[in-house]
Each structure stands twice: as structure tokens, then as C-alpha cells.
Length: 128
Image 1 (spheres, rainbow, N blue to C red):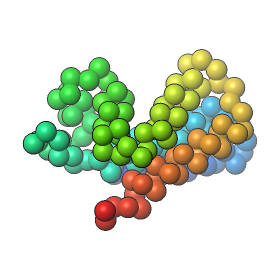
Image 2: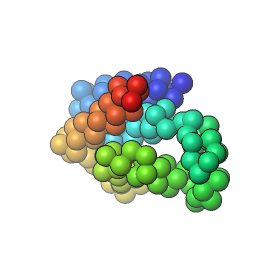
Image 3: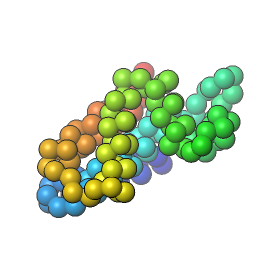
Image 4: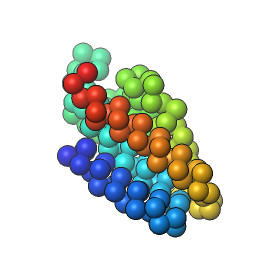
């Protein structure tokens, strides 16, 4: 289900990118697509001799202030080669949503490329 949700958001991300409008939402949909692909890859997750089925479950266990903080820690731990992609999307999404919605084409394209890298790691390597 998470993979399908990620793909659903990715379709909108791609559409917005090709239209060249609402680049702030290109970044936002890229970030939320990435979240779903990451959750698809990670869960169920065996961590500290327990199995967690969702980010909600493990964030409570970790006593994390938010699911985003918990997910970032899990990406760093279990998908370390994707932490820079995750950080880029997270920071730029927050900036686009809360500080400055004016996003240039280059940054929107980079966001879509980074989403692609996360998707590849989280969906195409499922047998590893």
C-alpha cells in the first residue's frame, strides 16, 4: 500500500514538474512520495529485538518528538546512502511550504531526481 501511495504522489509530482508551475508542490509531492517509498522499504522493521509494523509504532517506541524525526533516524541507520536525498527533500519541502514558495526550475528538477534515487533504492532492490 505504501508503495502505491508513493507512486500516486509521484505521478502528481511529475505532472507538476512537466507543467512548470507550482514548483513548491513539486518538492512537496517529491518529499511525501519519498516518505511512502521509505516506509514501504523499512516496514515491517526488526529493531532492538522487536518488530515494528509502522512509523507510528516505532516513533512511540523511540520516544521521538515526531514521525519525521524518527524516520530520519531510521533512514540514517537503515538506508544511510539515502540520507542526503532525504535531508534535501525534507529541508526544501519545509522551506517551500512555510518560508518561500518561490522555487526555481533547477531545485524542482533536483528534487524529482532525488525522489527517483530514493524510489530506486526502496522499490527496485526489494530482493536485497
